[in-house]
Amino acid sequence: MASISTESPANLNLLENGGGCCNCGGDGVGRRRKDTAAISRHGRSAHNLSSSSLRKRSDLKLISRVPCASVRRFLGNLQEVLLGTRLCLLFPAVPLAVLARQYGFPRAWIFALSLLGLTPLAERISFLTEQIAFRTGPTVGGLLNATCGNATELIIAILAVGQSKIQLVKFSLLGSILSNLLLVLGTSLLCGGLANLHKEQHFDRREAGMNSLLLYLSLLCHTLPMLLRFSEGSDAIGRLNKDTPLLLSRVSSLLMLFTYFAYLIFHLCSHRQNSVSPEEEEEEEEEDVYDDNVRDMEEAVIGFWSALGWLLGMTFIVALLSQYVVGTIEDAANSWGLSVAFIGIILLPIVGNAAEHAGAVIFAFRNKLDITLGVALGSATQIALFVVPVSVVIGWGMGIEMDLNFDLVETACLALSIVATSLTLQEGSSHYMKGAVLLSCYVVISSCFFLSPSPPTQTITTGQTFTVPIFRYSQ
Image (cartoon, rainbow, N blue to C red; front, side):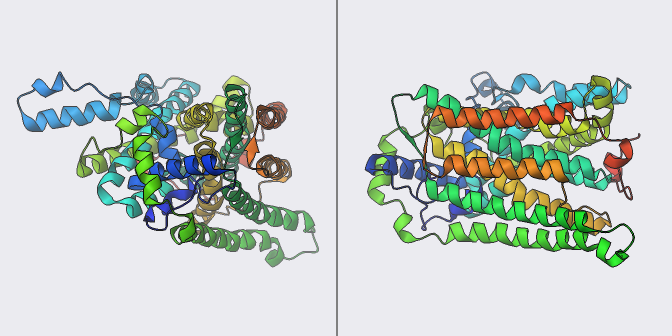
């Protein structure tokens, strides 16, 4: 994205937004620097800005008439959390999913309701982490935003690993990466190009290149275990050699996590010449940088302990609904006549991250491509370098053989998507045709998994089952 100020530790959150400076002319650089100045305040990330485009200011006039201060404070927090988003109409899906589970409704209904309920919850977790960041400062806020940016994917992956549904974990994480690189970025570039036909759209080429390099690293870590698996002999190779891909996956996961944290430190120690000058910050205060509604929300609306309590509660509900999703996805696939691969790779990421994706497209309309790239590339990089290796390490601790071998077709789709995205972004400028090509790639991949047969249940669930007792789901 724009230049990163070394004076603000908020750069830790830039796995979700970006950094650097593009040599695209004075006006473009100044605009991107002002965008980054706005993002860096309170540790806000591109993920937060993307989600904030779907928020709305709550009207507290009626609640202000409540005489009891503690009750008035609780009702105000309740209204801000539940009604402060345009996705609040989807909240009834949460209790409906629980009731459907308790009263034995068809499992496909449980899956659909749980998936719909996760959509506003993911946006609300972003809101609550931002509220905590207002109180804790940019360093802790940036770390919190970088960690919770893909909390839904991480929770689903952990629960699926706990039930030894290794293939489902790989499907969902691969789908999140593909949807960010092709669907979100492609839609954003297409819509942004059509909406700004008479403007030249630029973005930070250096940060796009850094994210592409990190994605190539993750691709290497996925490709080598797959190649080792293909090179095995059925009889001539001993047990030790057959375990080599798993061992390589675990070592690679540790290195990927090291690289993830090194990337955060890299942004924390950015060069001083990339910082935003005080004159530019004063100019940014006088100019609307991204959106009036977002600017109005640049202050905490609930207290620290209230935000922390709501965040823990929302995380618990996300874990519960994620358990429902993991436990019913195969039944939903059989009921709808779809493969588990198609649901896990295509449907699950689209619905689960709808709020974040919509925000990215909105900012592309407003010619804020750095924020859009921060959402798409930042989220894909975080999943590839953080969520995937964490899943492998957690499986390692549980004694479950979770590896980085995503199989041939899946790995090929990942490789071609990363190559197509890096080639699209190498010039530092964009037009609608680039978005159309990325969307076409996503449609082709979606068609591939739509037409692929569903694998047998035993290939979805393998190994020893491990479940958290409070969320144990009866099969």
